[in-house]
Length: 350
Image (tube, rainbow, N blue to C red; front, side, top):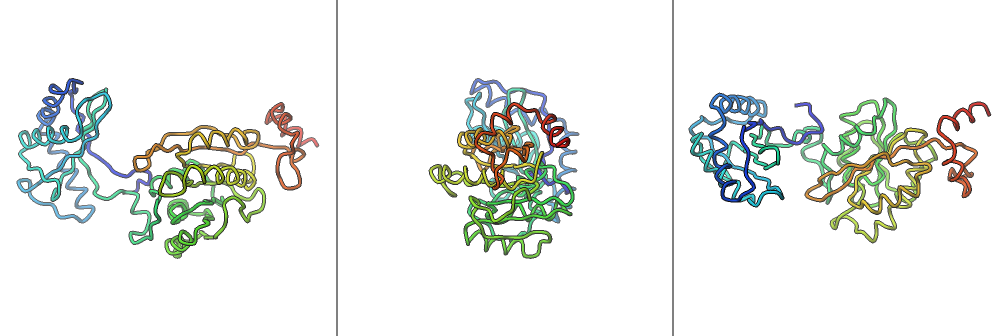
């Protein structure tokens, strides 16, 4: 398995059926889903599952000893809850495929999710998330450890080049640096945090990783020169287990200002993950003249609706900056009036 941004892989049975929004009719239709799958498709799914189990060095029991469990995900459009969905599908599996259900000691793990365009019915092919093969199995976890698959996707969004310097100013347990050093060779990762506990965990996790440095700092006042970072990728504090909405209001503005200051130049990136959507949008508006918000995407982080914000550094004429690299107070209207190409041509002919 070489996939980095994928947690789990399923065999999709693609059942040719639909589930009604009526409760009683829907339960009956869910129970009938396995009977709509051909025996050939069921055997093919078993063959692929056995290959996957052998690849992961797991023992494979004979067909008559196989046991299963069902994980169901309900949808707002359907009045059927997850328990009813799981029980109905389990009855159908026992009847159609003659396998026994067991929620604890199971071999086969089925997924059922109701969707408007038809149910999603699949068989899990890997027991552990694929992204865990990237990081050390005995790593020291922080309170809100970032998933390696999410860290990989964030770095990949930045489109780094060989030799790029990528920074995580609030690194926690150092997942960003650990994933980056494995999956993005030839790049240098600089990670840091204010918490002594987080720094200790990062040192433990990154001690054997090349091209990664761990520094204790305050993200509101980074000990870095202007224009030295090619990309920021960071999981910002949000939720109740790490930080709170009140403290984030005093953390986000100076932290975003420091990232803007340290980004190298035009088209350098900042990929930031947070559930503080309103606060981030408000702060991005204040920096729109020099740090442009391209887009943001919804991300499910442990059941929390978070957003992934994608910023890029805009070109700013050096004549519009003060001695500290900040915009002069009267520069905003000049930046808005000038196009990027016009400003660049103006600087080249200066």
